[in-house]
Image (cartoon, rainbow, N blue to C red):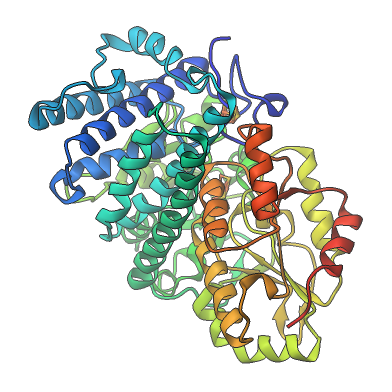
Length: 547
Ligand code: SF4
Ligand code: SF3
C-alpha cells in the first residue's frame, strides 16, 4: 500500500484509495498531504501547550486555515506547492516552539525532514492508518475532515476581512486532540459535537462576510446560454477572487461566466452591475473536462473541485489561485494586501475563441435566508393551506458515480406538493428539471454554494419560530443529503449540532465511519443511508406531521 485515503465519498470500494486516488491524487501527493496535516497538528500542540492565543498568532492562523484547505478533495494536486507549504509550516512550527519553550512534545511538533523524498517517506508513516484502533481512528478522522471543511469556510471569510479568534483557537485544540492518546472514545465523540458547534459559527461568519460585502442574494434568473465575445470561466467558491476578476475585466471586451459552485455569484446584487458578467456555463464539477473543451477560453479555479486535465491544451488554459493547484497550470498568488493580478488570464482570453453554446435558457436561484424570509408569508400560507406538504433539504455535493442518478430520480418523483431546499453542487442533479412551482414558489429553492448551507439552517430555525414549535424536528422538513468532500462533513456536523435528526446521507455512508461510530450516529441522531427512490419517498412522506 503506497497511500491510504478515505476522506471522500468516492474512496475506492468505499474502503479507501491505496495506490492512487479515484480523484486522480497520486500517492506522492496523498503522502505529502498527510504530512502537511501532521505538521499542522504539531503546530497545534505547541499553540495549546504554550497557551498561545489566536490573536497573538496573527498570520499563522491564516496559514493554518490554508494548509487544511489545500488537503480538501480536488483542491490541490501540485506536489511542489504542498512541499513548499510543509517547509513553511515546519519553519513556523520551529519558531513557535522556540518562543514558548515547552518540552515533551509529540513527534509532529519536532520531526525533521530533508527534501521531498524524505517528506513522502515521513508522510507514509503518519497518515490515517497510524492510529490502530479503528473507532479512535474513525473519530479522529471525522473531526479532522470537519476541521478541513471549517477551514475552507473560515478562509473565505478571512479573504473578505472577517475572522474569529475563537474558531481558530478551537481548531488548534481539536487538531491537537486528534494526536492525544489519552482521550477516550466518549471524549472524542464530545469533541466531534463541539466541532459541529464551531462549524455553525464558521458558516455564520462566512454568511456575514458574504452578505455584508456583496449584499443579500436575491431571486435571479441566470442565463445559461452564451454570447459571442472571448471569455473566462470561473470555478470554485471564492467570491473575493471572482470580484477581483470582474473588476479587472471591466471594459476589456472579455466576458465572464461562472462554472459549477460559482453559479451562486449570479445571485449577489454587487455582481449584477457588471455588464460583461454573462451567466453560468455548464454543470457540476465532474463534467468539467468536456465543458472546458467547448468553453474555448481560459478557466480560473479559485478552490475545489479540479478534475485532472489529461489534455495539455486544456491544462494550458487552466489557472489556479488560493488553496487550489495543479501541476503544469499557472498559479496566481496574491500580494501582501490580498490583491491578485489576473492580466495573464485576460490576455489569453483575448486570443481565444468565444465559448461554444451547449445550452440555452435560464435557471432560477437566489433563495438564501434573507430572500426566503421576504417570501415567508407566502410560504407559511402555502404550508397552512396544505399546498406545500413537505420540504426536502437536498443540499450537498455532486459526484461522478452512477449511483447519484438516485437524486435526479428522487427530485423528479417527489409529490408535486413538495419543495426542495438546496445548496452546493448537489443541485445540478435536478436544477434543470421542469419541476414547476407552487403558487409562484419554485419547487427547487437554491440557497447557493455548499458554503451557504447555513442559510438552510436559518430558514429551518425561522420556520420553527413562525410555527411556534418546540423542536426543529417537528417541522415538515426531511433531510436527504448528498455528500462528497469534507465541506459536506462540517455541514453534517453543524446540522447535528443544531439538533436536526433523521438525516439521510448518501449515496453511501462515509468509509471513514467504523461500524461502532456509525452506530453512535444512527442511535443518537437517526442518521441513515438512502435506499430505493420510491420507498424512501414513501417513508419521508409518511413520517412526522405537517405544521
Ligand atoms: Fe480517494 Fe477521495 Fe482520498 Fe481522492 S480524496 S484519494 S478519491 S478517498
Ligand atoms: Fe461541490 Fe466539489 Fe462539494 Fe461545494 S464543487 S459542493 S463537491
